[in-house]
Image (tube, rainbow, N blue to C red; front, side):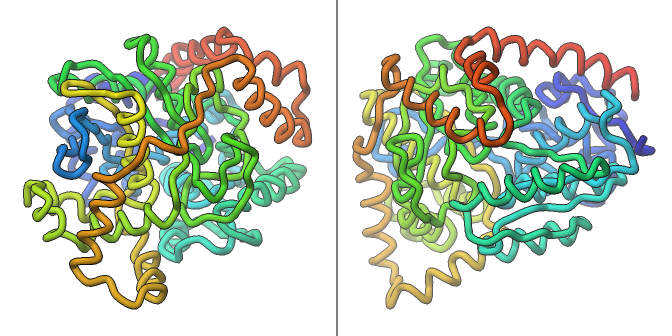
Length: 450
């Protein structure tokens, strides 16, 4: 057993004010001063030092819509991404259940942020981590994993070839010394996001617009984050949930399996932990627009100010978004237009990480464009954000449409050893609710071991 099998409960990650004040204060100080101090486990939360959700509300001057786009910011998590949350949840569940001990090697199949989170949490808990990733991701992701002591096991391809990381993981799992944090299939990922991200989304709209959530959008990688929609729908039954996919790899929408460049999403599969019952729409986003949008947020300060965005807000956007966050913003605008949302309505989404791991993405972009003068960025901003169209929206609310998604999941997961009966059990909301109620038991186990 690791020497430090402690950290927050699910309730404490949602509501850090429940943490003992002396622990909370030490954790807040360590977040910026002592990154590898295990006390940082108590910083795994969407909330800041004042217990308010870290967020930004994008103005109509940027979005071109009357509804509010509320973006929860993942950059404030330890290691710089909210994916550290499900990595911790999966590890701590394994530890308190006795399935993971100090002698095990932790396998983390990922395209980046979950792998970074796995390496980081493993470092804090004294565990060895091997991160299995495609070999064509941003170099900053590899560097961050190695910084946290994680070993890399690279498979061919890019974001769209994540299935190869799963195949490699299942092969390595034949060694009993290896324990896999297979984010695509472990329900601890679902539990973290339904409870912590979903509950935080509900808190994020307090005092914003009408205080309700009309829509929640998330681009599925593992389909963990989109589980927040389950909790949102319990609070606001009228809320609609949309999964965002790359236009170039529209697997859920129409079975497409092409290559794309939005790191962290669009993995050519319907993940095991995706609760398809609560997904109302699938919306396609063009990968080039996310990279162009990233350029605008990071380097287009005067473009944003010229549109009417407050300068201080525009300056804050420079470091708090990566490509998947831009994808989510575009998807939120499309959803608001499709649903005809108006003043007071709120669409919530997340920015998984910040810009710090994407310098190489913009560097590559500069090789592809002859010119990116200010007037080019001005045109991009008007086309991508203000001019976003309510097109490429696929409605999956009808049972016959939903059936297509269930069949996709069956096609993807029977080959990994899951029975059709088990997959069919996921067609009932009771399956997901039963998995969610396990949080109470884990809260008690974590607190007892502490």
